[in-house]
Length: 145
Image (cartoon, rainbow, N blue to C red; front, side, top):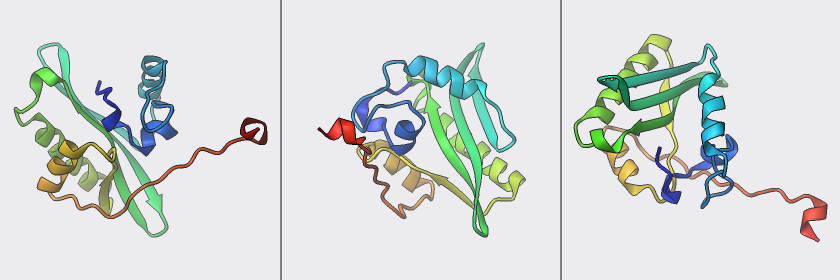
């Protein structure tokens, strides 16, 4: 698991994996176990194995907004021991096959603002930056005092 603060994006905050844009949840392992044990028709998990261990993982979710649909790449992870061997590209090819199978219009993803190596990778394989996501915590009246 990548636990550098640069990896944190808005979905890590919204899903409870991170407390804010610079710090991970103190119970991250429990949050992930719960998240990955859930299943739904719109969720796909693609695993790449080496021997009996998971070398990489891609998690996707289908969303429909208005007249368009998208396969959202929720996470792409390659174990550090297996990086720089083309595994991320292989997982992304499988994600693209899943998008075609599901008949969606787009593949989307979001990435932590400072995760520049991921940005470079995704741009190199055809993704384009189209927006910047922003979050602001809502303080209860009792918290503001």
